[in-house]
Length: 405
Image (cartoon, rainbow, N blue to C red):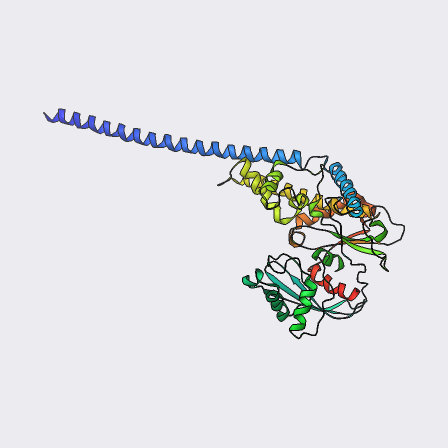
């Protein structure tokens, strides 16, 4: 082969390599472009699904008729309260009689201890009370963990431990097999005496009743006039009043804005068909509802800023609904007591004590609850309603109830 022909062949081969290289590069670019398009399509699909969910929830929960819907919830709550006070089992609201017929006046004085028995720990409170001018002089709180073996052990072992740590007031949520259903006050008194402590158990109250005087999930308690409690058959208390533990977490009404996601959460819960109001309003469930929304509609990961903003909006809608329903429940109580109108007593105030992490830490929830209540009752009546954060109200309230006995 002569030199010119060899150069020609070499040149052709070089061209061929260039073509091959070019084809490879073009192929790679095509694949990259296809992948980019696929990602964009998926991103658009995620965006579209997120927007669809947002519109759906806005229609079902945040639609313009929400105020009318809430007024129907207020009425339904009021009706259920009447039914629950009339007879046992007459309502989804248990309206439990607490036998607390007298609340603190503010003139209480002395040193008192309260015991808050929770699921895994015991909180002990020591409260030094002055008179009305001084109020709470000092308070100390100590929390100790309960050993796991005592949580499923015998009553003697459990209460001996509590008494040894210094106790006086006990409550709920244990699975200890041998003391479930026993009289807690009697058991605790017995072991306090056995430990040689110079104390006596004076009051045993539900944590919500404690907050009323001074929970997990959601509940409400209020003071009712005894003549309005038809199922009460005991003597009339000197005060004529009785604190009622509503157990309002179990409230249910056809007017509640339930969605398919609420139904799914309820079905997956440990207590299906119970505590519906609680599952729509309490911090324990709000995040779970949002999770179920996306689990059922779409799985969102590696999202754009726009999609994340939509997710935030969905979270706000769920939280707003919870706050509005809580406000409606509060108004239901005010309506039952006839305090949803302008009082004839000049300067009379209605104080609502709120406790719990959701109210304390979720500012938007708190503001929405307060603003909703204000919108529902109107500007004039809202001036007579005061909502106060009662930090650790259940424990301090228990101590105060001792003084009011």
